[in-house]
Length: 224
Image (tube, rainbow, N blue to C red; front, side):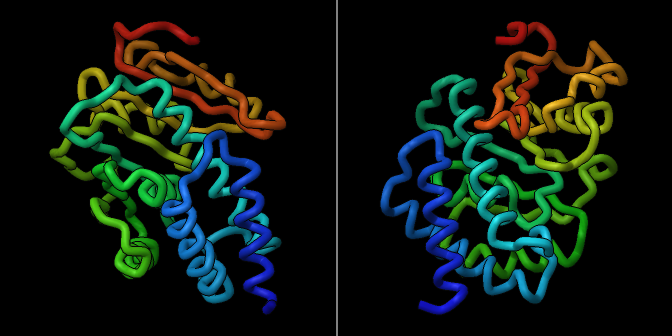
Protein backbone atom coordinates (compact mmCIF):
# COMPACT_ATOMS: atom_id res chain seq x y z
CA UNK A 1 0.00 0.00 0.00
CA UNK A 2 1.43 3.40 -1.00
CA UNK A 3 1.83 6.28 1.43
CA UNK A 4 -1.19 8.17 0.06
CA UNK A 5 -3.36 5.04 0.11
CA UNK A 6 -2.37 4.40 3.72
CA UNK A 7 -3.20 8.00 4.64
CA UNK A 8 -6.54 7.71 2.85
CA UNK A 9 -7.49 4.57 4.78
CA UNK A 10 -6.56 6.22 8.09
CA UNK A 11 -8.63 9.30 7.26
CA UNK A 12 -11.65 7.19 6.27
CA UNK A 13 -11.42 5.32 9.55
CA UNK A 14 -11.33 8.61 11.48
CA UNK A 15 -14.41 9.74 9.53
CA UNK A 16 -16.29 6.49 10.24
CA UNK A 17 -15.51 6.67 13.96
CA UNK A 18 -16.06 10.41 14.24
CA UNK A 19 -19.32 10.76 12.32
CA UNK A 20 -22.41 11.35 14.49
CA UNK A 21 -24.47 9.21 12.12
CA UNK A 22 -23.97 6.10 10.02
CA UNK A 23 -22.74 6.99 6.54
CA UNK A 24 -24.29 4.86 3.75
CA UNK A 25 -21.89 2.94 1.55
CA UNK A 26 -22.74 4.98 -1.54
CA UNK A 27 -21.84 8.16 0.33
CA UNK A 28 -18.63 6.59 1.65
CA UNK A 29 -17.57 5.97 -1.93
CA UNK A 30 -17.98 9.69 -2.69
CA UNK A 31 -16.14 10.63 0.51
CA UNK A 32 -13.35 8.21 -0.43
CA UNK A 33 -13.00 9.92 -3.83
CA UNK A 34 -13.02 13.32 -2.11
CA UNK A 35 -10.23 12.28 0.27
CA UNK A 36 -8.16 10.82 -2.56
CA UNK A 37 -8.46 13.98 -4.64
CA UNK A 38 -7.67 16.29 -1.74
CA UNK A 39 -4.64 14.27 -0.66
CA UNK A 40 -3.40 14.40 -4.24
CA UNK A 41 -3.76 18.17 -4.44
CA UNK A 42 -2.62 18.93 -0.89
CA UNK A 43 1.03 18.68 -1.96
CA UNK A 44 0.44 21.34 -4.62
CA UNK A 45 -2.13 23.70 -3.08
CA UNK A 46 -2.60 24.89 0.51
CA UNK A 47 -5.94 23.09 0.95
CA UNK A 48 -5.53 22.38 4.65
CA UNK A 49 -2.84 22.85 7.29
CA UNK A 50 0.65 22.24 5.89
CA UNK A 51 1.83 20.95 9.27
CA UNK A 52 -0.11 17.67 9.01
CA UNK A 53 -2.35 17.59 5.90
CA UNK A 54 -3.94 14.14 6.50
CA UNK A 55 -4.88 14.91 10.11
CA UNK A 56 -6.10 18.39 9.19
CA UNK A 57 -8.19 17.01 6.31
CA UNK A 58 -9.78 14.39 8.57
CA UNK A 59 -10.62 17.08 11.14
CA UNK A 60 -12.15 19.37 8.52
CA UNK A 61 -14.34 16.58 7.19
CA UNK A 62 -15.49 15.29 10.58
CA UNK A 63 -16.29 18.81 11.79
CA UNK A 64 -18.24 19.42 8.58
CA UNK A 65 -20.27 16.26 9.19
CA UNK A 66 -21.07 17.34 12.75
CA UNK A 67 -22.21 20.71 11.39
CA UNK A 68 -24.53 18.90 8.98
CA UNK A 69 -26.01 16.72 11.72
CA UNK A 70 -26.52 19.77 13.96
CA UNK A 71 -28.30 21.68 11.19
CA UNK A 72 -30.50 18.76 10.16
CA UNK A 73 -31.74 18.33 13.72
CA UNK A 74 -32.86 21.96 13.80
CA UNK A 75 -34.36 22.42 10.35
CA UNK A 76 -38.06 21.65 9.93
CA UNK A 77 -39.01 18.67 7.80
CA UNK A 78 -39.39 19.47 4.11
CA UNK A 79 -41.51 17.83 1.45
CA UNK A 80 -40.86 18.12 -2.26
CA UNK A 81 -38.77 21.27 -2.58
CA UNK A 82 -35.03 20.75 -1.88
CA UNK A 83 -33.37 22.57 0.98
CA UNK A 84 -31.46 25.56 -0.41
CA UNK A 85 -28.10 25.99 1.30
CA UNK A 86 -25.41 28.65 0.98
CA UNK A 87 -21.88 28.05 2.26
CA UNK A 88 -20.39 31.55 2.57
CA UNK A 89 -16.61 31.81 2.32
CA UNK A 90 -16.41 28.10 1.56
CA UNK A 91 -12.71 28.15 0.67
CA UNK A 92 -11.96 24.71 -0.72
CA UNK A 93 -15.42 23.36 0.10
CA UNK A 94 -15.74 23.08 3.87
CA UNK A 95 -18.39 22.38 4.94
CA UNK A 96 -20.60 22.78 1.85
CA UNK A 97 -18.94 20.38 -0.56
CA UNK A 98 -18.69 17.72 2.16
CA UNK A 99 -22.42 18.14 2.82
CA UNK A 100 -23.14 17.59 -0.86
CA UNK A 101 -21.23 14.30 -0.80
CA UNK A 102 -23.55 13.07 1.95
CA UNK A 103 -26.83 14.70 0.93
CA UNK A 104 -27.28 14.81 -2.82
CA UNK A 105 -30.75 16.27 -2.39
CA UNK A 106 -29.38 19.60 -1.12
CA UNK A 107 -29.42 22.56 -3.51
CA UNK A 108 -25.96 23.81 -2.57
CA UNK A 109 -24.43 27.18 -3.42
CA UNK A 110 -20.75 27.63 -2.59
CA UNK A 111 -19.91 31.34 -2.27
CA UNK A 112 -16.21 32.25 -2.42
CA UNK A 113 -14.32 35.41 -3.36
CA UNK A 114 -10.83 33.98 -4.00
CA UNK A 115 -10.05 33.07 -7.60
CA UNK A 116 -7.85 30.07 -6.77
CA UNK A 117 -10.51 28.53 -4.54
CA UNK A 118 -13.25 29.08 -7.11
CA UNK A 119 -11.13 27.53 -9.87
CA UNK A 120 -10.35 24.52 -7.69
CA UNK A 121 -14.01 23.96 -6.79
CA UNK A 122 -15.13 24.27 -10.41
CA UNK A 123 -12.56 21.63 -11.33
CA UNK A 124 -13.35 19.34 -8.41
CA UNK A 125 -17.16 19.23 -8.54
CA UNK A 126 -17.41 17.31 -11.86
CA UNK A 127 -14.50 15.08 -10.82
CA UNK A 128 -16.43 14.08 -7.69
CA UNK A 129 -19.68 13.63 -9.61
CA UNK A 130 -21.83 15.64 -7.22
CA UNK A 131 -24.91 17.33 -8.61
CA UNK A 132 -26.90 20.31 -7.43
CA UNK A 133 -23.79 22.32 -6.52
CA UNK A 134 -23.29 25.85 -7.83
CA UNK A 135 -20.15 27.93 -7.29
CA UNK A 136 -20.58 31.70 -7.06
CA UNK A 137 -17.51 33.93 -7.13
CA UNK A 138 -18.45 36.82 -4.85
CA UNK A 139 -17.68 38.61 -1.63
CA UNK A 140 -20.98 37.96 0.13
CA UNK A 141 -20.51 41.03 2.32
CA UNK A 142 -20.39 43.33 -0.68
CA UNK A 143 -22.06 41.55 -3.59
CA UNK A 144 -25.77 41.61 -4.34
CA UNK A 145 -26.81 37.97 -4.16
CA UNK A 146 -30.53 37.88 -5.02
CA UNK A 147 -31.25 34.30 -3.99
CA UNK A 148 -32.47 33.53 -0.47
CA UNK A 149 -31.68 30.30 1.36
CA UNK A 150 -33.19 27.97 3.94
CA UNK A 151 -29.80 27.44 5.54
CA UNK A 152 -26.62 29.51 5.52
CA UNK A 153 -23.37 28.16 6.93
CA UNK A 154 -19.79 29.29 7.44
CA UNK A 155 -16.63 27.67 8.75
CA UNK A 156 -13.72 29.92 9.77
CA UNK A 157 -15.23 32.86 7.90
CA UNK A 158 -14.90 35.69 10.42
CA UNK A 159 -16.30 37.01 13.69
CA UNK A 160 -19.98 36.78 14.46
CA UNK A 161 -20.41 40.55 14.37
CA UNK A 162 -19.15 40.51 10.77
CA UNK A 163 -20.86 37.36 9.50
CA UNK A 164 -24.29 37.52 11.13
CA UNK A 165 -25.47 40.54 9.09
CA UNK A 166 -24.38 38.76 5.90
CA UNK A 167 -26.17 35.57 6.92
CA UNK A 168 -29.31 37.52 7.86
CA UNK A 169 -29.40 39.12 4.41
CA UNK A 170 -29.27 35.70 2.71
CA UNK A 171 -31.71 33.74 4.88
CA UNK A 172 -35.40 33.29 4.20
CA UNK A 173 -37.73 34.22 7.04
CA UNK A 174 -37.67 30.87 8.82
CA UNK A 175 -34.15 29.88 7.81
CA UNK A 176 -31.11 29.15 9.94
CA UNK A 177 -27.48 30.17 10.11
CA UNK A 178 -25.09 27.49 11.41
CA UNK A 179 -21.40 27.93 12.19
CA UNK A 180 -18.57 26.49 14.27
CA UNK A 181 -16.49 28.36 16.82
CA UNK A 182 -13.70 27.76 19.29
CA UNK A 183 -14.67 26.75 22.83
CA UNK A 184 -14.28 30.32 24.09
CA UNK A 185 -16.71 32.05 21.73
CA UNK A 186 -19.05 34.02 23.98
CA UNK A 187 -16.93 37.18 23.86
CA UNK A 188 -17.83 37.56 20.18
CA UNK A 189 -21.47 38.10 21.15
CA UNK A 190 -20.55 41.37 22.88
CA UNK A 191 -20.20 43.10 19.50
CA UNK A 192 -23.30 41.50 17.93
CA UNK A 193 -26.38 43.61 17.25
CA UNK A 194 -29.05 41.87 19.38
CA UNK A 195 -31.71 42.69 16.80
CA UNK A 196 -29.81 41.06 13.93
CA UNK A 197 -30.29 37.37 14.70
CA UNK A 198 -31.14 35.22 17.72
CA UNK A 199 -29.00 32.38 19.08
CA UNK A 200 -31.32 29.38 19.15
CA UNK A 201 -29.08 26.37 19.84
CA UNK A 202 -25.53 25.30 20.70
CA UNK A 203 -23.74 21.96 20.77
CA UNK A 204 -20.23 21.01 21.89
CA UNK A 205 -18.12 18.98 19.50
CA UNK A 206 -16.86 15.65 20.89
CA UNK A 207 -13.95 16.26 23.20
CA UNK A 208 -15.08 19.90 23.46
CA UNK A 209 -12.74 20.90 20.64
CA UNK A 210 -15.24 23.47 19.41
CA UNK A 211 -18.85 24.61 19.60
CA UNK A 212 -21.62 24.52 17.01
CA UNK A 213 -23.94 27.54 16.97
CA UNK A 214 -27.29 28.07 15.27
CA UNK A 215 -29.00 31.43 14.77
CA UNK A 216 -32.42 32.38 13.47
CA UNK A 217 -34.10 35.67 12.71
CA UNK A 218 -35.93 37.46 15.50
CA UNK A 219 -38.98 35.74 16.92
CA UNK A 220 -37.61 32.19 16.89
CA UNK A 221 -37.07 30.15 20.03
CA UNK A 222 -34.28 30.80 22.50
CA UNK A 223 -31.16 28.61 23.01
CA UNK A 224 -31.75 24.90 23.48
